Every structure is written in C-alpha cells, then in structure tokens.
Amino acid sequence: MTRYKVVMLDFDGTTACTVPAIYHAAKRMLGLHGYEVDKDVVYKNFALALPFAFRCFSGDDSIDDDTIEQMIAEYNHIYKEEAEVLIELFDGVTETLDRLHKAGVKIVITSNNVQPVLRRLTTNLNIAQYIDDIVSVEDVVNVKPAPDIALEVLRRCNVEGEEALVVGDATLDMDMGREAGCDLCGVSFGSHTPEMLREKGAKYIIDHFAELEKIVLG
Image (cartoon, rainbow, N blue to C red; front, side):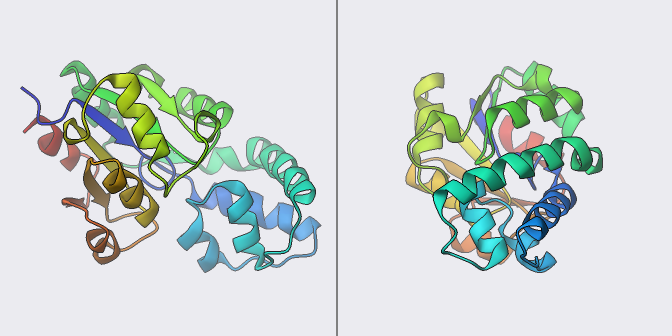
C-alpha cells in the first residue's frame, strides 16, 4: 500500500531544468521591448505565471495587459524555436516516474505554465506515458500560490488532501499545497532554498528526484 495515492508534480525547476530556456527566451523577448534582464531575478522567480513573470523580470509593474499578451506570443515563439533544446530532465526523473506509475500512483503535473507547452515538453522528454493528467493555468481562476490547481487535482482524482503529495521547488508550490490540505515535498535543486520551503510547511526535502520513490511508496 502506497503512502500517497496522488503526486502533484511541478514541472519547471522540479521535474525538468527549464530555467536556462526561460532565461534565454525572456531575455530575447524583453530585449525587443527595451528591457534588460537580471539573470538572478529570473532564476529566483521563474515559477511565476507569465504575466507576473514578465513584469517581475522587467522590473516594470506598469506594463499593460495588451502588451503582456504581445509579449507572451513573442516569448512562446522564441521559447519553442530557440530555447527548448536547452531543457533536460533532472537525474532520476524517468526511472522514478516509471516506478511510481507501475505502483499505481497517479502522477499529475501542476504548473503555472500552459497546456500546449507542458504537453509538448513531456512528450519530447519521453515522460508523457507516466503522466495521468496536467492541471495548469487554463483550468483554474487563480494560479499558484492559490490552492485552486491542487483543489482541482483532488476533485479530478477523487482523493482527500492527506492522500496527495505536492512536490515543488518554489514557495508558491508549498503555499498551494498547504492551503489545499496536502502534504508537501520540496526539492533542494530549484528556485528556493530548503529553509524557505520548510518555512512554508514542507514535510520532506529531497536532494535527488529518486528520493521521491521512498517517500511516496513508503
């Protein structure tokens, strides 16, 4: 019997190392609009949904919604055409997801990214066969750190919060899972430090993705 029936798995910074790709595309796109991008700012805030991310990366909260929409289109084009080749899974992801899947654990990607990108990347990285569902910005009113995405997963999987484990690299992942009543697992190799994740309620901290198997299966 597994300890958790459902694993809610963040993608960027938790499952795959996407930050170099995000930085490349954001720097190129924002440069077209006259903004300089600080690499450290991107690396600490890449988990934000794109409208919030672009205002954060540029340091300009006054960018209007129409311009944001244009920026998203430009960014997505650059990301797909130039940056996705930079993306790699973290060590142990494929093997761990395979074991969890075979054990009957439902694996759901929970992300502030968008469905087309997540579906394309999970396919290209050869892990789509292990993913039972993807819940992202298109599926909810409020994105992370609000609990909406996690609550939608609980509803779809028909499980209680204590039967699900939220895995993420950012404090917004922990906020989302905590407010939905789930257990929390932080990873030490993403955007936020283990101390920051523990302060948000992380029950577990892992240094390698493969450590997730023992936590979930018991």
